[in-house]
Image (cartoon, rainbow, N blue to C red; front, side):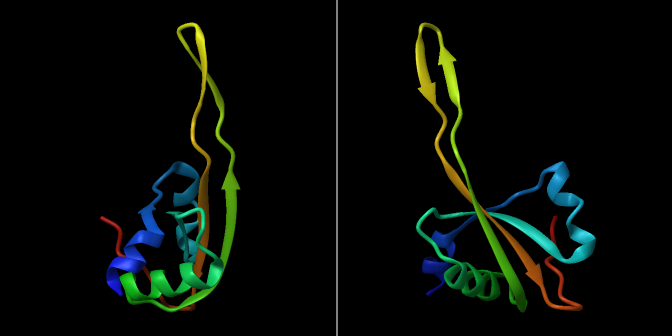
Length: 93
């Protein structure tokens, strides 16, 4: 079942904005677009061995980019802001 969880959680996002969330026990993850909140919660609990309080998701639409003389588009992606229960923490290196 670990491989299933790793298919849902693609990466832990480390941006300036997401580091401001850490003292509040919130972490930002890049997740599979087809995953729902329950699957994301189970995957985070299984991979990181923590208890999840809430999961908020959002889908970011891709942007139009110009490459030479053609228009291209960056892919859409889904992010999940995961709030951990009191006293829980994910070790980030």
